[in-house]
Image (cartoon, rainbow, N blue to C red; front, side, top):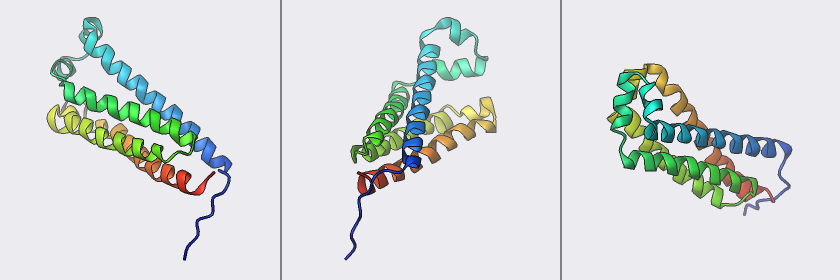
Length: 145
C-alpha cells in the first residue's frame, strides 16, 4: 500500500508557476499580434508577400485552435498557482489545440518554406513547456497543499 504525503509547495514550485503564468501571457501577446495582422491592412502590408499570402488564407479553425491553446495555457497557469487539478485538464486542452494550430502552420500553410527551418524552434519550445506543465500540474494537485 502506497501513501501519498501532501506537503507544502516548495519555493521552486512557486517560481516555476509564476514563470508559467508569464510565459502564457507572452502567448497571449503572440495571439494578439496575429489578430492585429489579420485585422490591419497596414500591418499586413508590412509583411513579405509570402507571409501576406499565408495570413490572407488563415482559416477560422486554425485561429480558434490558436485561441484555445493560448487561453487554455493562461487559465491552466492560473489554476496551477491554485494547485488545482483543473490546471492539468486545461493544459491538456491547450496541448491538443496547440497541435491543431501547429498542423495548420506546418502541414497546411507550410510556414517553414517561407521563414526557414528556424520556424520550428519556438513551436518545439512551446510543446516541451506545455508537456512539462501538464506533468507539473498533476504533481501539484497530487503532492502539494
